[in-house]
Image (cartoon, rainbow over all chains, first blue to last red):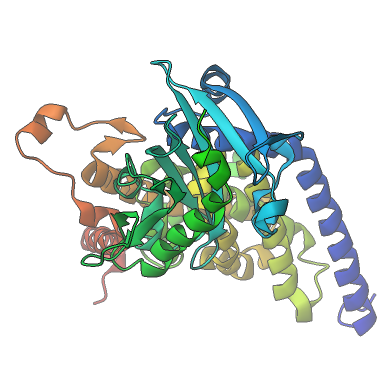
Length: 231
Length: 210
């Protein structure tokens, strides 16, 4: 058979592509359950981090069920609605109008018995999505802890949002001013936020810093009724 | 069995570890060697991944070498490498999620690692599967060798730990010792790599230009 002919080349490449596609599809399908489990564990580790509990992949499940007492959905009016929080895709949810959003709340009981509300946030960074979890104290106003992460922000600049020095700044800042939702400003040195608490932006990571500010404002403003409602 | 590890085959396997090292002598695969060696663990995972991919790609190409149409041989090589890399990426996501998160894009970028295409073109297309396999393992190990040295030095000086375990005692920090932030950054890896090449060339007479 002539191995340099066009016919041979075309048949060879077609067969190769089909074989490779079959092998890859098989691998992806057979490993999917394990990967999904890893992603779920990773998410639980992130949620726990916002309330200062450092979990490893091994004990994340256990610590999560120990500290996160419940998770549920509310609407923009602050009333609880039916639905499975695990099934909510934040990426789709944040694009909807505020009144139509279903908002996830995780409730956490820390070791000293205090209740913390953990609110997930999601937004667009400079290069890709950024997301995080904001834990507020039971006054529904002051921040207890935060966790931010990102898909592909610039290492050393915007990517610093997933480091502790940046996240620690948010602690004990207030989301509300005079019982109105005010969010938290992420400001360059020298700038002062009007009528809201502020933290320092990352030098060289201005766009990511502003993206964090916008993400907090966009996502948490939907929780205003929940945050301002007194128990 | 004796001719499986004949003198010639041993040379194929061990050559890339020293006098024909893909990183320090052929200067291939530098990008990933700088990017993933800030800590020892990702360096080791990357080493294993590259070794596996280059060995199996070599075997597959070597088995197919008499059937591959010459005009599309580069495409065939790329498809084989890309498929193997995707499999490695999926396996890492399933069994070593933390490491796969740290390596992020660099697993995908194994496809563009010059060592792979270099070995496939230069060796696997012209040699039998077993020799190609040894060549792949040898080159993978040569690459790993450099990565592990870099990862070891950078993690020790940069974060004071090895494989995640703290090595430098707290009393050192109390006395004023500080981790070197520069070592974490890629430029330091380039400087260290330069030092490795320097040491290797000064010790190995074959590599010195007369």
